[in-house]
Length: 157
Image (cartoon, rainbow, N blue to C red; front, side, top):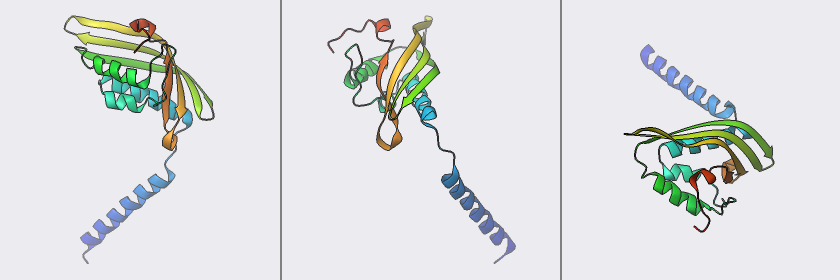
């Protein structure tokens, strides 16, 4: 075996050992960090108009005070895909309270649409989210409040 072949094998072994060590010892996210990540993931999916990824962040048991369910949110998200222009969603999570497998999160959210006529604010204000830890420790939104009034959504979907 030549010295080059030995060097390549040693390098590959070192990389494999480092990758295995990372997988074993990588830092685990706290529940708070997972909740913030879920909300930011949802905001990013809305911005990309990606209905599937948005719905992954919503619990099958979603139900809010306006009477909206996950099925209705999916319909609203499908309609949002028809919005001309690009969406820009900014979210700053201002608080998270965790109680076992349930959590409440508060966030300041701004949704803007940019099209040929300029940039328009669709929503700008505080939102509250209820979340539940579901399969494999994933946090999903079970309720959200504060945005429905801005869209004049009526019950009856």
